[in-house]
Image (cartoon, rainbow, N blue to C red):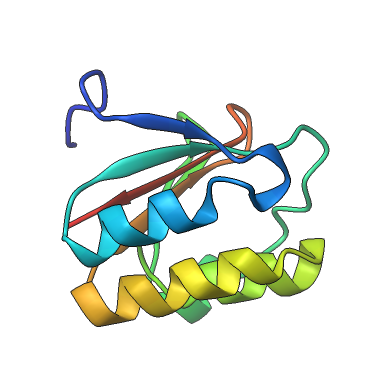
Length: 106
């Protein structure tokens, strides 16, 4: 499991920081996005080749297309742009519903 303590963290703020995250992902740099509480996280991890981490309630090492599904579920078009950046950089995604976080990494 990768260490997350030293990764840069960006607050989603209704998509205001999406461009910053997108550029970081396109440069293949990891980033943590703090998402709004109450977000709908109901995605099928198997569809995006995630590895379940039931001890922490996370889906790990998912395909970046997972962000497209989350964007659709939560009406966050800016998240679709970050999904495109993930596909460009071949980045992987972890989702942490309990912590309201999305972690983008290599």
